[in-house]
Image (cartoon, rainbow, N blue to C red; front, side):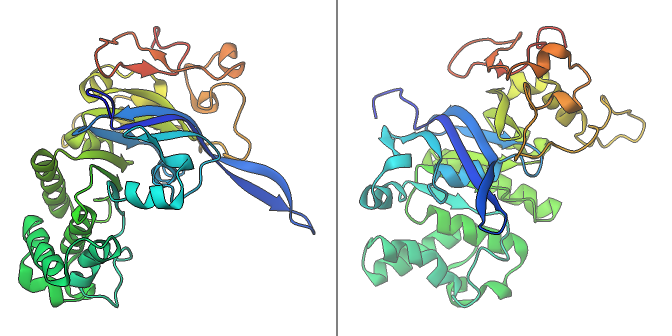
Length: 332
């Protein structure tokens, strides 16, 4: 990777799932889970990926890691194409791309001790002797706020926050460069949530980690992200520096999401009305802008063509431009 080049480049990535029906289970359509997503992530940067449940953000994360095979598009990690890497190449790449999963109760094997869970990646990749691996596991557990004496315990002996710390330790075992965190704090209590977020921020500074932080909670994403990408029905509809997106949202969907963030003031009115209706089916997305059936700013032109991501009115340029996919972004 050349100096200044992004760590991760995602270009026009698509992921479709076939829909089958009838007596012979013939293909009758596709679920458009991820539809032409493009973005970059630099070393040490956190990209927050936000959207409603079902918008495709978790599928996007899994496709980047090749846990799901992409339908088309490119995923370049340090210049290597993950989407079309061989098994041998992918095995090496996965040392540098790790994941933290949403549910700390189901992402840990209940039949394995915590020591075995965290040591397993080291064993699979043949890193060090068994004694060296155990010593590294102890150090990792202490790094995430647990103790080395806990490595012989089983997951059911830990609280939810402790289990998620184990998940963080497992993700760090191979010293990755990129961590894809899929709703890592959504299943945790508020007090524990802040501890895990602060832990992730501290580890990022110490190890120069890059994060793709997937969440439906904009208030959490605001706390941890350098840049934010807003997803709707498989597409990114707005992306840019976190402070610009929050201060000057340029897509109607982003404005609704920000307006829905709870505020600890009972006298303060909501800045926007709740979003009407449900998201359209990804099997038969609407023509034109995918958000137009629920958008109060929609006009006839919004139904004609999918708007491209273009510079927002407040775009300040720089390494991460502020882009929005809305033909009326200069009017709202």
